[in-house]
Length: 173
Image (cartoon, rainbow, N blue to C red; front, side, top):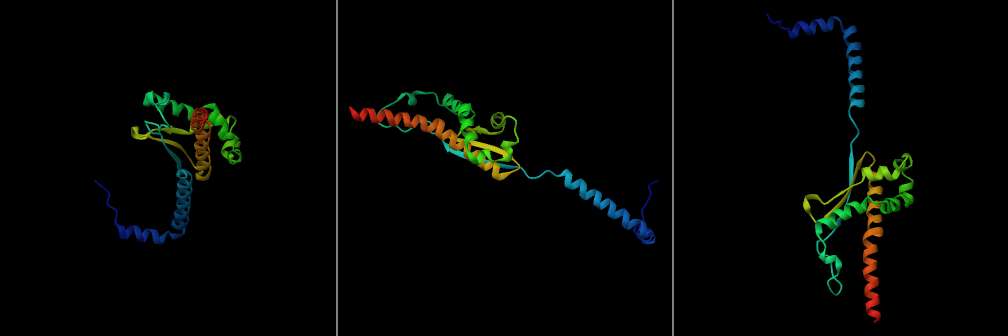
């Protein structure tokens, strides 16, 4: 049959052998604490930057070549450009990024950025998310903000500057 444990008898036996039970309990407690400490991973953080990428760009005066493009292709192009060599080089030129241990410890920081910086249009929205996850929230924010700035300066503002230049030339006539 089944063995029944009498709680009162168990308590009496423990009290009789307290010199053995207390050190054994402490040892098991310490072992459990060490296992928990090494078994539980540190919290993982995610830094995110969001940019509005409208389907219909604003027009200065008349319809330009941009208004006739397929928005799905345009979105996919932006996702590729965020991880382009030009943008990643601009990220890595920033002193605050160069100072990060996460960057200095990499043999190939460009490849590491390309692999760890993520970008997408969640739920098909007109919002571009640049995101990175890891264990150092300050480094994540620095890298995501630098990527956001580099994308704006190397891709978005270059196109905008080109349009401004065309407008300036038109006004000169």
